[in-house]
Length: 312
Image 1 (cartoon, rainbow, N blue to C red):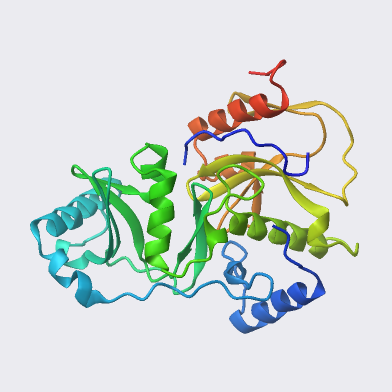
Image 2 (spheres, rainbow, N blue to C red):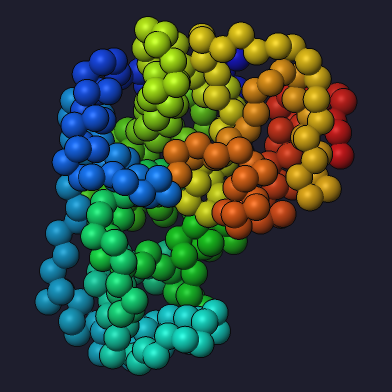
């Protein structure tokens, strides 16, 4: 298999050298940032192949100061505030707490912006995946939203609903970082998954293997068997490696009535900005994936591995 599956994923929301030097960087970065919280991972801003990822976008509040006070700007801010109140009444916020930081234009009637809303957030750079494209979150409670006809959506929601196309998100990523390297959005071995995201996933998978064993392996021994799409800022994949000798034994996994058939001990996992890798059952139990997401993933899994004998 080794990354040769080229079926186009549903719309839903490279081989760099990586060896002991990368593991040393991981240890050093842990010491510097005091990574004591297992649920959050500062390590996702690691350099790739010895070259640091582009820095955060340069925000200039003066460029959007007037937009905040236009009729459209106030509508976006008020609709965002209304969405927060619908989810949780505890936030005692006003429209003055909601400020648009940057506007990236209008796509198919969607106004794409970043904003803050007074709730704050960790001051740390992390990454998230939408449509197989890697984006940087510079922290501080910045929200990445799209507004259309009175509704406010997270970028991954807008993509899942078809309000934003992948081409739109590529264009937005270039607006955020004008000199963005092509591998942030150019497809790698899997349709819809960029080269840079593939690098991150493979290197983190290798790091997990290296951490749990003394076997001398490199990134060349790791590959992505299948890519199932991006859901809620997480990439869903099945990994492969030259270390595990998986036993060939068919098994059925039941996740809330949705059945997955596997022919070995290998399983589908998710990868995202705060949690390295997680099994689908754990992701579902934590609310990171919905049952509809699970059904969509199972449907694609059947198309790829069991087209003539699916399990439902």
